[in-house]
Length: 213
Image (cartoon, rainbow, N blue to C red):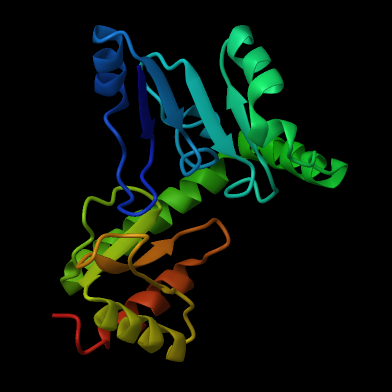
């Protein structure tokens, strides 16, 4: 048995109840597998992710907050040896270039040495969520730097994306099959490179979208 979850869900921006899921897996004799791709670099102690409880396998990416390429798997020695020798996706994949590895290592050092960057992302995201709620948008369950607004139909999401682009903001519409029919949305991802002015500009432009309600 294998219990699989993301720690931070990429479309709704909410966190999984990791401790409870871990305990559930243990109760039924399942290995626990958690994907920290969207949390690493921003959440958790030292930006190491938000996982709570005991997890047998932890995976993540180097291509999001770390700005490089590739990914990683952590687990027991037996697991890693099995993947090295049996995983076709690893065996038949070209190795990462030294440049990508050096970039990821440097980003990891910055992540650990400069907690102000994480605090900045979290503060800006909190301001964005607050502003959206004041404007009456449905943010689903977002509580992170991934902030969606639910628009429903594909036409509505595309119209909103076009409105944003005309206002100088690139935020593509997310439609099926990425999300279920009727749950089309615009998803915003806050980074440390954004400024307070960027957040206020976005709120101003989006508030003029006449079809929002």
